[in-house]
Length: 221
Image (cartoon, rainbow, N blue to C red; front, side):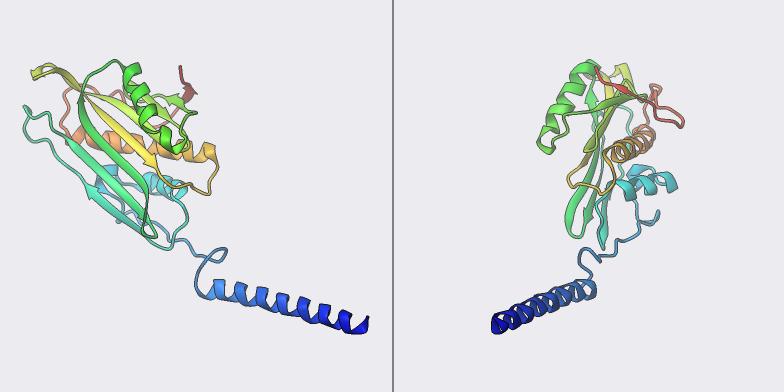
């Protein structure tokens, strides 16, 4: 009995030591749960997102913890008023993996409800089925995985095809450590800032219908 007891003691001691070694190794190699997350600087953020401390804070809340963030920006200007080709984007990688994508394009006008349905369908693969509306553009929606705004841009009679809007879409491909309610609001803030920037860069003629400051949510219909 004493021999068996001693074996158990040695086994427990060995397991404890192994566990301690793993913890130390995790700390030294900067892996979870000791991984130190990078702090996003405003100078790093894509110009197409609009910039500023508010957007930097929204990104920090939305992106997953990572030791390194990389930004790939395309901040186009529509110089020709007869041109209906406008596209801007920002892709953000967290530790080498795409974590957030923001794409804004000029599209021929469709009823806002149809645009909303298509947007939700396009994001169904990331589980973004529950969403709310907020007060921006002709139509705007946000969930904890995506946000989108339909922004008036060019009136009928200027471009071939009639009226054109900007379709702004922010898509989170990785989960954040923040709560769903926080990420929903942060994604809406990112979409709103990108929409303001795109409305200016696309030199839109129609009022944007974007709020000056506060985002107000309401259940989507």
